[in-house]
Image (cartoon, rainbow, N blue to C red; front, side):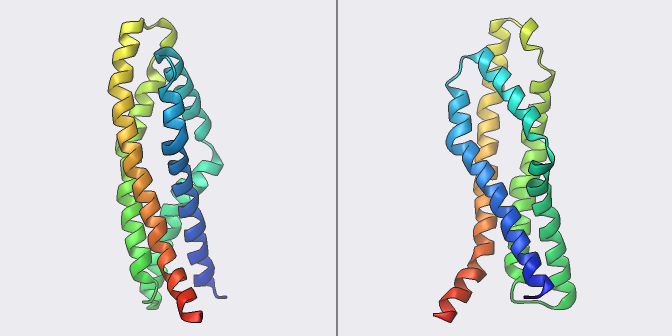
Length: 167
């Protein structure tokens, strides 16, 4: 096993972890939060947004982007053409569909939520905030969930091809 194979494995692992995180949000967290009354929904979402900002999350979320970029650059520089199309496609999908969507969509919504003083805001204003926040946040999460799964799926293709050849 060479360095590039290990790097590819790290790309698979980190991208898979990100895909799993967004998938679990899509399948359970947003639905569970959505069932809560407005004040509790917003308070719980604030808590989750604080809790997720940790080194473990950043390792997979930002690490995927960095390691995919490194693998593409090294593959291109060293002429490793067999994996480069998969890495390039995964990088583009992840960078645009996961990272950019999060940075330009989910993060600004999370910042607005963090600034909301739930304890001193009346119920009607909280309801209006929730309506503007929840639908948009959930749509953006669906986009990044699909993108993360696609990026991971693209990286799996060479593994499946290799298994098919060895049988």
